[in-house]
Length: 360
Image (tube, rainbow, N blue to C red; front, side, top):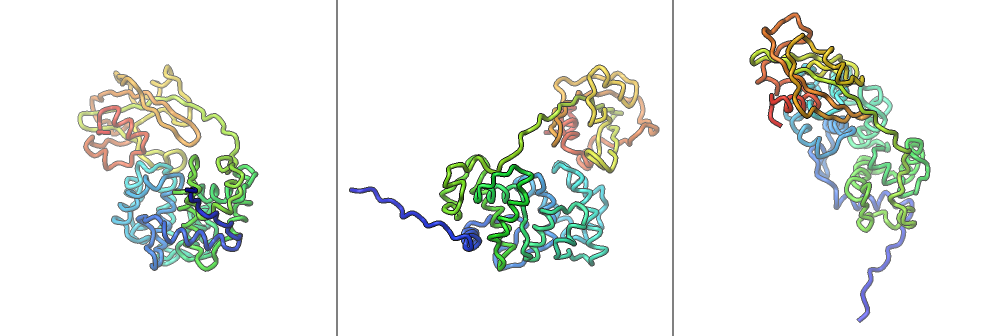
């Protein structure tokens, strides 16, 4: 008996690519905490908040943070009224802390200058703190149904493969945007933006694209050539520099010495234990010169390792006991039991765990 074969699908016409994508999305859309259900208008505040959180972060990491933020600050006006310190504490662990400061600044502007309503225009959204081209396009498209191309990594991968864009990123961004605009759905631009994101996240994966599930398979140039994994073309990676340093955990009974980092720069505005400058490579022999006081500093074996975007860091952890909680020292004293209320970035939480102050 002859084997049965599925009838080959015809390539999707260029004008119908957007419709094919939307038909797929209507069946396979992801249910996300910030996403409006079918038939309901999107909440611009939820769209903006999620997009800021999702910058350089995964959906899995963001979902819990988003739900806590929405429960605590259900409107942009409520977020604007919150002290920045509380926002930083709620953000702690999500990384890229400049986003949290810009989030708060943006909320205040929207509340005070726009009456608590986000502007619908992409160009006007771009003027807000922390809102770049992708976020402005995503909010305009998803929240206000404007015909904008929201171009994140998932979208760039889908479109680069679909049209076999040979230029390397980031130079290819303009070409990719032009291609995406060529099949953008003018009737449903918000759904189109989310559909492209979902296709890249669930089907057109970086290392193992599931092409047989893709609604655009028959029109995909790289699929026809068998070169899907060659796109998008990326520039050669440069080596990430490695830096060393030390961090000093000073106790006085049940109190700890903490400092507040400068508002601008790495981990800006967050709480930290005194340390060597994190942006410098300080060899172990020179590290003790940065200790906040002369004391019998004890090194904890093992150290703490952390990777930032542009460099990796290894910190030696020293602990010591102070005779008194000297208020003249740079920083402030806080109780060990209140560390959970501090805006500690992930790096300093690792230090606290390594020093036995909190559980992992």
